[in-house]
Image (cartoon, helix red, strand yellow):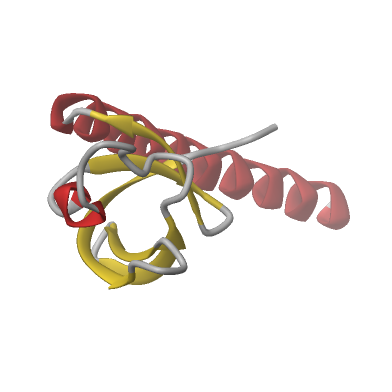
Length: 98
C-alpha cells in the first residue's frame, strides 16, 4: 500500500536535481519534485504548493483543502490505531493474569 502524506513545498533546495524542501506536519524534509515539476514554469513556482509526499518524492499536487482533509483523516486513523493497540495490550494483560 502506498501512503502519501500532504506536505507543502516551502523552498527549492537544488533546481538542477529537482529537490525542494517540504514541510510535513511541522517537519521539514528534502523531497524530489520531478514528478510534479512544471514543464513551462520555473521550479520556484512550486513554492507554496501542496503535494502528496511518499518516501521522499512529491507524487502529485493537491489543493490546500484536500491536504487539510487528508491530514485530519490520518490523525483520526492514528488515534484509532493507538486505541486499538491499547485494547490489544489490555486483552493480553487479562489473558496473562487469568
